Image (cartoon, rainbow, N blue to C red; front, side, top):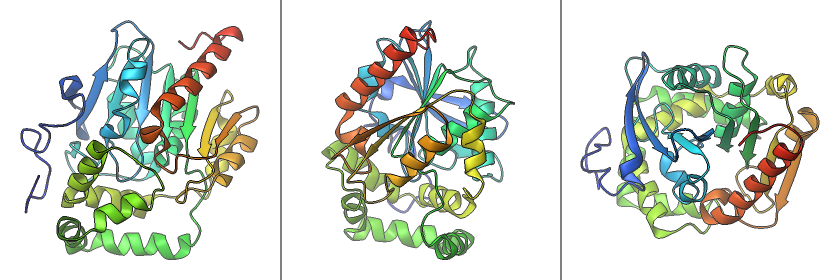
Amino acid sequence: MMSGRERLDWQTDGRNWPHRSASRFVQTASFDWHVQIAGPDNAPIILLLHGTGAASHSWRNIIPLLSSRFRIVAPDLPGHGFTRPRGSADLSLPGMVRALSELLGTFERCPAVILGHSAGAAIAVTLAADQASAVPRHVIGINGAFLPIRGNALFSPLAKALFANPFSASMFSMLARATPLGGNLLTATGSAIDEEGKAIYRMLLASPAHVRGALGMMAAWDLTRFDATLRRLAFPMTLIAARDDPMVPIANSSHAARQASGSRLILTERGGHLLHECRAAEVAKWLDEVMSEQKSNGADAA
């Protein structure tokens, strides 16, 4: 595990990364990306977008369940994991979408499906609704964060202040290495994830650069006009939410389903915020059902 270093190092910190053989490093104008790519070359692409503070490892249990029929593309988002900015990074929602559009431009085909978790679901919707991007045929959100967080008048300025202070990320990471802070944050998700996942989250939280990326994303996040983006979607989406998620209330998904007309809402009683990590088989089953319905309705998404 890293100790005293600013950034994660792939040769040391990444040696036990899940599906390491699927990892690629892709360069665009704005970022040096870490991307995991798996599945048949000619299969429909599914883009997997993790949430704030996570990385591509968040999909470790989903990837084997989808890679027989999809071409998986799972990046570490800007500022997260092993993805590094090539200059100053715009970690706002529009900035994330622009950066991902650059990344997708390096592939020969656009995604058929975008699957996003938490803040990654908001990025997925914006990417799909952006007329400058190739439009996918379906968007799926898991515990999507689509509404401004309660107390945003406090949390957003606090995140901005922490992000502006060069010592904040280093102090947080030091605490994560020396105290139970990382474990406490994972407990707060309400999800019983495996030991592999816990170890990787602890490693990520011990990286000042990763923490700075998460703080920067929180500081720049603005969902006050997100309803208009939901209404711009050219197709209904599927929203999966756990009732016991203590971090993102199901009201986010219920509200988004009303805004994006015709969208399907799947509610489950348990799983917590990291639903896709601790109940991957069920999430994959719901995805298969959605894709089957798409085919039967004439939209051959996969």
